[in-house]
Length: 391
View 1: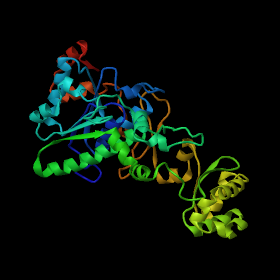
View 2: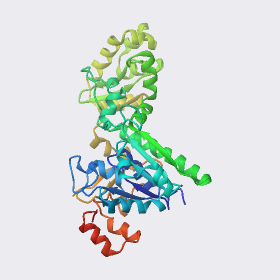
View 3: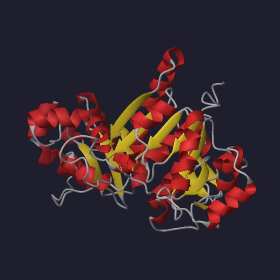
View 4: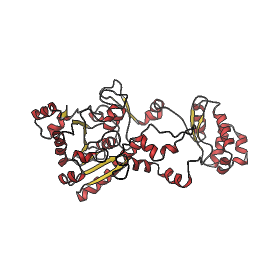
């Protein structure tokens, strides 16, 4: 065990698909665990979310880096037997089916915990394992609507908008990984496994904790500070955050708005809120007069919170991002150009020269994993011929 690979020696059987479960399992692998991704013969559905490059998409690359993939037909008895034979040596079993599906497959917690009492069994779902919506299909956008996020995220058009960054899937993966970390720590002394249930609904609510609490008590979001927000510049947009009264005075000096700074009506936050239209109009008109980069430099020199609104290409190639090594450029099968993959906080950088940075093709490691499990070459070939596995 080491700080670089504290989970070295742990074995993870990952039946989940999409992003939430697979990304959680990928994090376990980045911490040193041996993660075997068990997917259908035609692959995890995240491999189909266009644009597609060979067997991969952006969704499947980020969620499966470093795993070993085996393609198994879980509708066949032989396919189910392969998974069951992995359980005695597994430390973590992870599934992300809708409630009821894993029971029909025969891999319930009660059954698997009899085979391996120390197994940590993780179930990820959209709405949870209980309640009237438990069986309703629910991907990230559905939970953005259900949990209030979209109602809070109205544009200037007044229409609720979803964010395309799949915040609920990603936060579910992170909450699940921290729950597993705690369970692994507890298991060291007791030796007993447990079942961990996490839903996108839970993760979404917790991600929005502050707004959920304040929104329930005080109603829809209202700006609490002025000037504050995204403003048009001469060639784009800039984000500005002004909190304290003395920061407003610095802003007026930086923008050359001496009269605005000297007006007693705007000396306090409450006063600026009461006259928000006047303040915002004056600030907006001045920011429109010059390019974003000019105002970024001026406002940064004044010690004020601000930043140019960038797209992903601008962000990835920003000198600060490049110097800090945030992004690793990884070659992946099926893609002619490398992928920019963010390095996970607290973990070593992804090294493009090692195999652990490759997201596997469908069933790329089926023969290898089954051989490790004791299957003879002839038996593996027979399973493939029968449609029980994919090589």
